[in-house]
Length: 502
Image 1 (tube, rainbow, N blue to C red):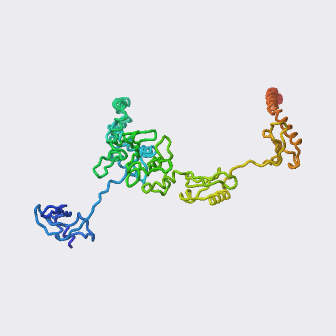
Image 2: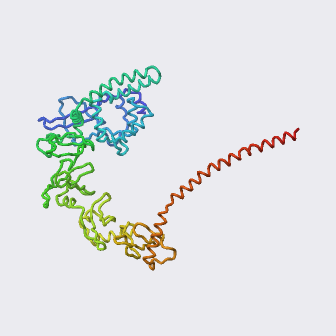
Image 3: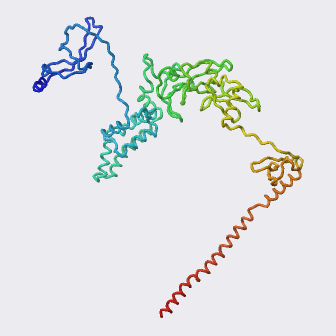
């Protein structure tokens, strides 16, 4: 009954209101957010059911006026966080392009593919996350080709292309109008110096690559020297941030502004001096992560930090241990070759000759002893590792036939025993015991082999080819001689048929 009657009543008038309450001294301020009912309407009879926990916007507030005195009966401290709009996914980006009139359904897939293939973005949880390259290209285009990256320009060009397709606009006119403005923009940009372009991009990407430190200091002040200023620079490996006092100051970091206690956040860090050489040990940030460096020469010794090592907690002692690699564990007891411990692409390992065997942790590289290293290498070989190849031992050796000549050896080969002088190999006759062959018999086998190879097999091959070539004309003649006979046979049969018919 109440709902039926309420449906015939006037609508309620509700005003969303924020009330600020200030104490008499003006030092403390409180805020209340909710709704003020200006006219009850059907609320006087019936109201819809509400959830147990109401949000702030649906709370009822009294109808107050500026300057009214109130009594606070309940005060709650609440905190609010605002979130940025979510990153575009493939679906939401296509929807946005459709709203702006950019592209066609047939081009959406290629647009999304180009963004990924050119490394302008990377995907994280199916969302497009802009990369440094994409930010640089966007900043460059917005500063020097602003007209051509505007949404309206692309949408208008789509419409004009439709006019060309329908025959209402000449394609030459469209290209001429486009090229006149575009060529002028290219010419104006080509006259700029590299420093002017970098300064424009520095200003455009300033909040991203030079974030505010929060202490009022200059975000572009070099953390390594006194009066240097960091700015965007280019190299053959891409863009990076460097100091204006180069080469006196060699401070560099990656383009993306780092955060936290990483070495990139505070620049290069001097860990101390090497007691042996007296050179400074630096912790630096490279393209592939943090690394330690000894000194500042042309080719200083460097070592990347292994996985699990924190750059913020790195000390001089551990840095020197890294720079001491590769470490010689000792000599192998079998052949005396050194066993080396080092770090590689696939983790810590020990090496003996051409045999590599992984060890457990990075600490094992610094602490592993000779006995354990030999055991690890032996287990690797037993498990399928390739041992280093060694020369096979000779079954017999004879003196050289001439002074200074090669020694004659009897060897065990893949296809049976043979004799060799280092140049010519001669297989032993079937049934010949390699242990009983004499020096004279070995020399005779090698001489016979040399004589056989000296004859060569190319000349008989040429004779055979010549015989084949001479046989071809004969075959052609035979075929030519047979062809008339093959044609005459049907003629005879036809004559015989004609005679019988008559």
